[in-house]
Amino acid sequence: MNKTQLVECVALEANLTKKVAAEAVDAVLSVMTKALKEGDAVKLVGFGNFTVKQRAQRQGRNPMTGEEITIPASTYVSFKPSKNLKW
Picture 1 (spheres, rainbow, N blue to C red):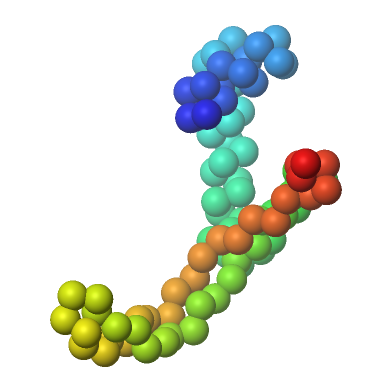
Picture 2 (cartoon, one colour; picture 1 turned 180 degrees about the horizontal axis):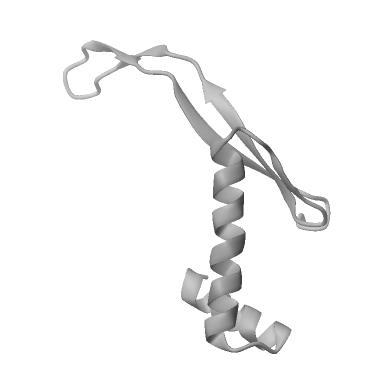
């Protein structure tokens, strides 16, 4: 499902116009993105938790040359589904 399909489904489910549904979806995604960028977790009961995690710097290997390289530290978002979402 892509964003356009999500907007269509939200519009049908909530009996909204596609324009209003698109604004609602954009607002939710914007708020979630802002919270995650600030390092906060987003917990949606019955759906799952989005958390920000850190990856430490580590050594890797270039598969083409075999040369050792340093992979820099990074930040990423992790999702853990709730029991309702698992089957």
